[in-house]
Image 1 (cartoon, one colour):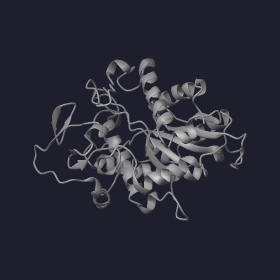
Image 2 (cartoon, helix red, strand yellow):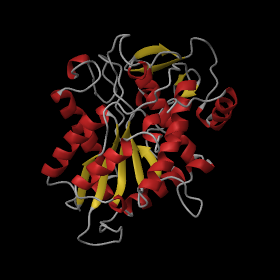
Image 3 (cartoon, one colour):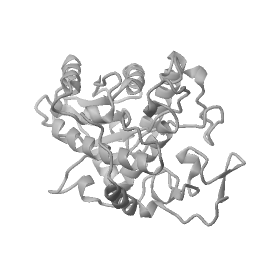
Image 4 (cartoon, one colour):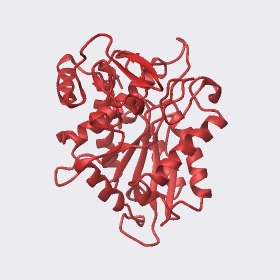
Length: 332
């Protein structure tokens, strides 16, 4: 499948759709503060730390207006959707003895995270005993390959893994999605806008594959430490821009864009929201103390055992304590 990329017209339409995320840059040296360090409008800063600051004129934060938590009608809907995740039998009907299917879709970094999260979930007395997880990832699968439901074998592998974990498609209600865009474009905002567009297609495909899917969690990607010999989408600024693509996607749903409608008779996709945001500036800690360095990876890209433990512990902590995710993930 050839990589999908946006035309100039499509890019302009998406820029218009994201205008609520933009704030005018008053000068080339527009600055904000993170960890008491000043940075210009073109320095990569974690979205959570950037907050109301800007990157090339686009406001930071995980959600619109520089916020890092859901708000408004979107938050209300996320609360009700999260509460609606209940155990289902193999046919997708409510059953007190059924299962809540929580699976991962994506590539190798997603696989490493999910394998570790599954172990922690199963071993913890704090998690919902009705949860049944499955790692349905494929090594090196780009979002374009996942979206290719005709010539690519990804979905055959995914459903095989689902069956091996005693889950059916109608039981899947929660997905953790992590991969990246295979296009070579590395400019901003063109790359994240394209990521947002192809992720929209992914959400639509996920709902056709899993008819009871309620919510999809995005984490962005970790910082990578790679040279020019590696895949371009895995080298910075690709992983940083992946987070922006996730942000633009979620903002589109909050702004009620038709192709991202998640409720009513016009429903086209599940709800999409942030899990635990992973990106950081390498050896500089984020405001929340998170630090990701090359020593936590095997090869500059994939987490080693120590790194995987750190990432999955943070994701699990989010799922247990987030007011929305905890409704289905935590034991009550």
